[in-house]
Length: 238
Image 1 (tube, rainbow, N blue to C red):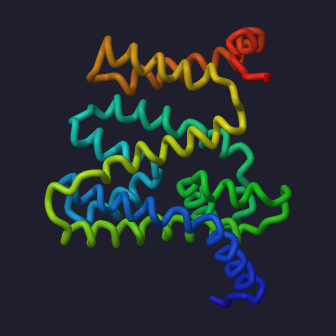
Image 2 (tube, rainbow, N blue to C red; image 1 turned 30 degrees about the vertical axis):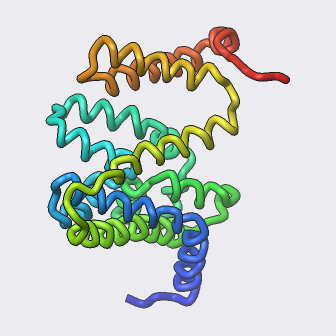
Image 3 (cartoon, rainbow, N blue to C red; image 1 turned 90 degrees about the horizontal axis):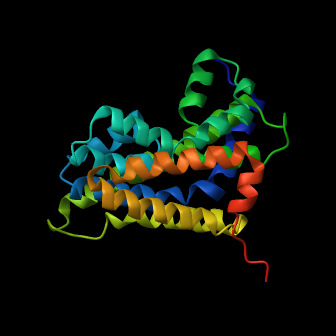
Protein backbone atom coordinates (compact mmCIF):
# COMPACT_ATOMS: atom_id res chain seq x y z
CA UNK A 1 0.00 0.00 0.00
CA UNK A 2 1.41 3.37 -1.03
CA UNK A 3 1.70 5.91 1.76
CA UNK A 4 1.67 9.52 0.61
CA UNK A 5 3.89 12.25 1.93
CA UNK A 6 0.82 14.03 3.27
CA UNK A 7 -0.17 10.94 5.25
CA UNK A 8 3.28 10.70 6.82
CA UNK A 9 3.12 14.40 7.67
CA UNK A 10 -0.22 13.90 9.43
CA UNK A 11 1.13 10.90 11.35
CA UNK A 12 4.18 12.85 12.53
CA UNK A 13 1.97 15.79 13.46
CA UNK A 14 -0.39 13.54 15.41
CA UNK A 15 2.50 12.02 17.35
CA UNK A 16 3.91 15.46 18.18
CA UNK A 17 0.53 16.75 19.35
CA UNK A 18 -0.11 13.70 21.49
CA UNK A 19 3.21 13.66 23.31
CA UNK A 20 2.58 17.07 24.87
CA UNK A 21 -0.53 15.75 26.65
CA UNK A 22 -0.13 11.99 26.53
CA UNK A 23 3.10 11.89 28.56
CA UNK A 24 0.90 12.32 31.60
CA UNK A 25 -0.45 8.83 30.93
CA UNK A 26 2.92 7.20 31.57
CA UNK A 27 3.03 7.44 35.41
CA UNK A 28 -0.62 6.35 35.61
CA UNK A 29 0.10 3.38 33.35
CA UNK A 30 3.09 2.40 35.48
CA UNK A 31 0.97 2.64 38.63
CA UNK A 32 -1.77 0.54 37.04
CA UNK A 33 0.67 -2.21 36.06
CA UNK A 34 2.21 -2.28 39.53
CA UNK A 35 -1.20 -2.38 41.16
CA UNK A 36 -2.32 -5.26 38.93
CA UNK A 37 0.59 -7.44 40.01
CA UNK A 38 0.36 -6.38 43.64
CA UNK A 39 -3.34 -7.31 43.57
CA UNK A 40 -2.46 -10.89 42.62
CA UNK A 41 -2.89 -10.84 38.83
CA UNK A 42 -0.32 -12.23 36.41
CA UNK A 43 1.55 -9.48 34.55
CA UNK A 44 -0.12 -10.30 31.21
CA UNK A 45 -3.53 -9.37 32.61
CA UNK A 46 -2.40 -5.73 32.44
CA UNK A 47 -2.47 -5.46 28.62
CA UNK A 48 -5.62 -7.59 28.56
CA UNK A 49 -7.41 -5.06 30.80
CA UNK A 50 -6.00 -2.16 28.79
CA UNK A 51 -7.23 -3.60 25.50
CA UNK A 52 -10.60 -5.04 26.56
CA UNK A 53 -11.61 -2.19 28.87
CA UNK A 54 -9.31 0.71 27.88
CA UNK A 55 -10.78 3.28 30.21
CA UNK A 56 -8.14 4.40 32.70
CA UNK A 57 -10.23 5.10 35.77
CA UNK A 58 -12.54 2.16 35.07
CA UNK A 59 -9.54 -0.17 34.76
CA UNK A 60 -8.43 0.81 38.25
CA UNK A 61 -11.96 0.29 39.52
CA UNK A 62 -12.22 -3.07 37.74
CA UNK A 63 -9.37 -4.46 39.86
CA UNK A 64 -11.37 -3.89 43.01
CA UNK A 65 -14.72 -4.86 41.49
CA UNK A 66 -13.43 -8.21 40.24
CA UNK A 67 -11.58 -8.87 43.49
CA UNK A 68 -14.76 -8.16 45.46
CA UNK A 69 -16.82 -10.49 43.28
CA UNK A 70 -19.17 -7.75 42.08
CA UNK A 71 -21.81 -9.05 39.67
CA UNK A 72 -21.90 -8.10 35.98
CA UNK A 73 -24.96 -5.85 36.36
CA UNK A 74 -23.42 -3.76 39.14
CA UNK A 75 -20.13 -3.60 37.25
CA UNK A 76 -21.93 -2.47 34.06
CA UNK A 77 -23.86 0.26 35.90
CA UNK A 78 -20.68 1.44 37.63
CA UNK A 79 -18.91 1.59 34.27
CA UNK A 80 -21.78 3.60 32.80
CA UNK A 81 -21.73 6.10 35.66
CA UNK A 82 -17.96 6.53 35.57
CA UNK A 83 -17.71 6.92 31.78
CA UNK A 84 -21.07 8.53 31.00
CA UNK A 85 -19.30 11.68 29.84
CA UNK A 86 -18.02 9.79 26.80
CA UNK A 87 -21.52 9.85 25.33
CA UNK A 88 -21.26 13.64 25.11
CA UNK A 89 -17.71 13.40 23.81
CA UNK A 90 -19.00 11.33 20.91
CA UNK A 91 -21.42 14.05 19.84
CA UNK A 92 -18.62 16.42 18.82
CA UNK A 93 -15.68 14.08 18.22
CA UNK A 94 -14.75 14.19 14.48
CA UNK A 95 -15.07 10.45 13.90
CA UNK A 96 -16.62 11.19 10.52
CA UNK A 97 -13.20 12.42 9.33
CA UNK A 98 -11.95 8.83 9.41
CA UNK A 99 -12.49 7.24 6.01
CA UNK A 100 -12.62 3.49 6.66
CA UNK A 101 -15.27 1.59 8.59
CA UNK A 102 -12.63 -0.24 10.62
CA UNK A 103 -10.95 3.07 11.44
CA UNK A 104 -14.22 4.60 12.64
CA UNK A 105 -14.90 1.53 14.78
CA UNK A 106 -11.47 1.85 16.40
CA UNK A 107 -11.94 5.60 16.86
CA UNK A 108 -15.20 4.95 18.72
CA UNK A 109 -13.54 2.35 20.94
CA UNK A 110 -10.43 4.48 21.62
CA UNK A 111 -12.22 7.72 22.57
CA UNK A 112 -10.70 8.87 25.87
CA UNK A 113 -10.39 12.10 27.84
CA UNK A 114 -6.89 12.68 26.51
CA UNK A 115 -7.64 12.02 22.84
CA UNK A 116 -10.78 14.15 23.03
CA UNK A 117 -8.87 17.01 24.67
CA UNK A 118 -6.17 16.96 21.97
CA UNK A 119 -8.57 16.70 19.03
CA UNK A 120 -11.11 19.23 20.34
CA UNK A 121 -8.37 21.86 20.70
CA UNK A 122 -8.46 22.22 16.92
CA UNK A 123 -11.16 24.23 15.09
CA UNK A 124 -14.03 22.09 13.70
CA UNK A 125 -13.09 20.49 10.39
CA UNK A 126 -9.40 21.34 10.75
CA UNK A 127 -8.15 17.80 11.41
CA UNK A 128 -7.75 14.79 9.17
CA UNK A 129 -8.86 11.25 9.85
CA UNK A 130 -5.24 10.08 9.77
CA UNK A 131 -4.31 12.51 12.52
CA UNK A 132 -7.34 11.53 14.60
CA UNK A 133 -6.36 7.86 14.47
CA UNK A 134 -2.69 8.63 15.11
CA UNK A 135 -3.58 10.57 18.24
CA UNK A 136 -5.76 7.75 19.53
CA UNK A 137 -3.24 5.00 18.75
CA UNK A 138 -0.41 6.91 20.45
CA UNK A 139 -2.58 7.61 23.51
CA UNK A 140 -3.37 3.92 23.86
CA UNK A 141 0.28 2.92 23.44
CA UNK A 142 1.29 5.47 26.09
CA UNK A 143 -1.12 3.71 28.42
CA UNK A 144 -0.52 0.05 27.55
CA UNK A 145 3.29 0.00 27.29
CA UNK A 146 3.98 1.71 30.66
CA UNK A 147 1.38 -0.61 32.16
CA UNK A 148 3.30 -3.65 30.95
CA UNK A 149 6.57 -2.18 32.25
CA UNK A 150 4.96 -1.46 35.61
CA UNK A 151 3.60 -5.00 35.81
CA UNK A 152 6.97 -6.56 34.98
CA UNK A 153 8.72 -4.36 37.55
CA UNK A 154 6.04 -5.26 40.08
CA UNK A 155 6.96 -8.93 39.77
CA UNK A 156 10.40 -8.32 41.27
CA UNK A 157 9.21 -6.06 44.06
CA UNK A 158 8.65 -7.62 47.49
CA UNK A 159 5.21 -9.06 48.22
CA UNK A 160 2.97 -7.00 50.44
CA UNK A 161 4.16 -3.67 49.08
CA UNK A 162 1.38 -1.24 49.85
CA UNK A 163 0.33 2.17 48.57
CA UNK A 164 -0.18 1.60 44.84
CA UNK A 165 -3.92 1.13 45.41
CA UNK A 166 -4.01 4.83 46.28
CA UNK A 167 -3.25 5.69 42.64
CA UNK A 168 -6.95 5.53 41.72
CA UNK A 169 -7.91 7.73 44.65
CA UNK A 170 -5.20 10.21 43.71
CA UNK A 171 -6.39 10.21 40.09
CA UNK A 172 -9.97 11.00 41.07
CA UNK A 173 -8.87 13.67 43.55
CA UNK A 174 -6.88 15.45 40.82
CA UNK A 175 -9.72 15.18 38.29
CA UNK A 176 -12.27 16.40 40.84
CA UNK A 177 -10.11 19.35 41.86
CA UNK A 178 -9.45 20.40 38.27
CA UNK A 179 -13.17 20.23 37.52
CA UNK A 180 -14.05 22.16 40.68
CA UNK A 181 -11.62 24.95 39.78
CA UNK A 182 -13.56 25.55 36.56
CA UNK A 183 -16.94 25.51 38.34
CA UNK A 184 -16.73 26.54 41.98
CA UNK A 185 -20.17 25.32 42.96
CA UNK A 186 -19.69 23.90 46.47
CA UNK A 187 -23.03 22.10 46.29
CA UNK A 188 -21.53 19.52 43.91
CA UNK A 189 -18.77 18.08 46.16
CA UNK A 190 -21.00 18.51 49.22
CA UNK A 191 -23.80 16.52 47.59
CA UNK A 192 -21.37 13.82 46.48
CA UNK A 193 -19.87 13.55 49.96
CA UNK A 194 -23.27 13.40 51.64
CA UNK A 195 -24.48 10.68 49.28
CA UNK A 196 -21.31 8.65 49.85
CA UNK A 197 -21.71 8.83 53.64
CA UNK A 198 -25.41 7.93 53.53
CA UNK A 199 -24.88 5.05 51.10
CA UNK A 200 -21.97 3.79 53.18
CA UNK A 201 -24.12 3.73 56.29
CA UNK A 202 -27.20 2.19 54.66
CA UNK A 203 -25.58 -0.31 52.29
CA UNK A 204 -21.80 -0.56 52.72
CA UNK A 205 -21.47 -3.36 50.17
CA UNK A 206 -23.18 -1.32 47.44
CA UNK A 207 -21.99 2.13 48.50
CA UNK A 208 -20.34 3.09 45.22
CA UNK A 209 -23.13 2.07 42.87
CA UNK A 210 -25.87 3.62 45.03
CA UNK A 211 -24.01 6.90 45.55
CA UNK A 212 -23.03 7.21 41.87
CA UNK A 213 -26.53 6.40 40.62
CA UNK A 214 -28.20 8.86 42.98
CA UNK A 215 -25.70 11.59 42.15
CA UNK A 216 -26.27 10.98 38.44
CA UNK A 217 -30.04 11.37 38.87
CA UNK A 218 -29.53 14.62 40.81
CA UNK A 219 -27.32 16.00 38.04
CA UNK A 220 -29.95 15.13 35.43
CA UNK A 221 -32.65 16.89 37.48
CA UNK A 222 -30.48 19.96 37.88
CA UNK A 223 -29.83 20.04 34.15
CA UNK A 224 -33.52 19.54 33.31
CA UNK A 225 -34.78 22.16 35.76
CA UNK A 226 -32.56 25.28 35.75
CA UNK A 227 -34.54 26.85 38.60
CA UNK A 228 -33.75 23.86 40.83
CA UNK A 229 -30.11 24.05 39.80
CA UNK A 230 -29.99 27.74 40.72
CA UNK A 231 -31.53 27.08 44.16
CA UNK A 232 -29.06 24.29 44.90
CA UNK A 233 -25.97 26.30 43.94
CA UNK A 234 -23.61 27.25 46.75
CA UNK A 235 -20.96 29.68 45.55
CA UNK A 236 -18.41 31.89 47.26
CA UNK A 237 -19.00 35.33 45.78
CA UNK A 238 -16.50 37.02 48.06
